[in-house]
Length: 44
Length: 289
Image (cartoon, rainbow over all chains, first blue to last red; front, top):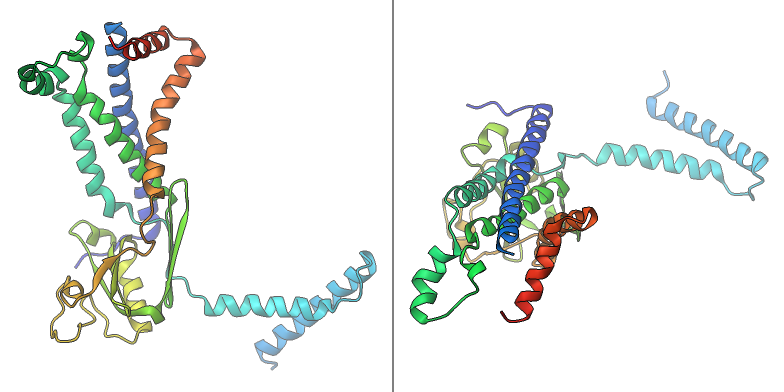
C-alpha cells in the first residue's frame, strides 16, 4: 500500500521537475540553433 | 447563551448600520439601504464558503505527463547524438537515382538536428500547457481551463454524469494522480488526464452520484463486471471536455515561431554577420540557384 505524497511535497517536486524540463528543452534548442547557424555560416 | 448564528446576525447588523451611516454622512450617498446590502453580502459570503467545498483546485499533476516528456527528450537526444545529414538520408537513397540535383549547400544540411526544433517546441508547448492549465473539482462539478495563448474552459456538473471511473499508471500511484474517466448520460466518455488527489476526487464524485465507490464503480447495462474500457464496449464514444479546437495547434505554431524568431531578432539587434548570411541565402534560393 503506497502512501500518497503531501500536496506541498508535490508542489515542490513539480516545481523542480518543471525547471529541469525547461532547462533540458532550452539546452537542446540552443544546441540545434547553434548547429543550424553554423551550417548557414559555413555554407555561404 | 445566545446561539452563534444569532450573534453573527447581530454583529452583521451593527457593522452594516455603521457602514450605512458612514456612507450617508461622509460620502453623501443617496438613501440606499446599506444595512440590508451589507448584511446580505456577508451572509451570502458565509453561505457560499460553507456550501462550496473544493476538492482540488490547481495545475494538473506533472507526473502524469512525464512519460511524454521522457519520450520527446529521448528522441531529441537521439537526433542530436546520431545527427544525420540530408545527403545520407534523402539524397543518396532517393534523389540521386531519380537524377534530381540539389544546391551543394543543402547536401550537408543537418536534417536530424533540424528535426529537433519542432520536437523541442512541442515539449516547451506541453510544459507551458501544463503550467497554464487549471483544474477545479467540487463534489458536484468539474471545471477545466486550458490553453497556452487562447484559453478555453470546460464545465460539467454531476447531474450530467452517469458514472465516474479512475485509473492510475505505475508511477502515478506514488502521487495519487491519474486519469478520471467521466461517462455522460448522453453517451460520451471524457478522460481528464493528470488529476491530482485522484482517489479523494473520484470518491467524492461517486458519492455525489450515489454510486458505490471504487475504481470500477459503474457497470454499463448488460455487463456484470466493468473493465476499464467498458464504456466504449457498451457504445459510449470518446470525447473531450473542451471539444475539438484548432487553438491548441495555433498555440504550438506560435511557440515554434517564437523560438525561431527570438534568436533571429537578437541577431538582428546585435547586427551579427549570420543574419546577413541568412538574407543572402534567402535571396539565392529565390533566385532559383
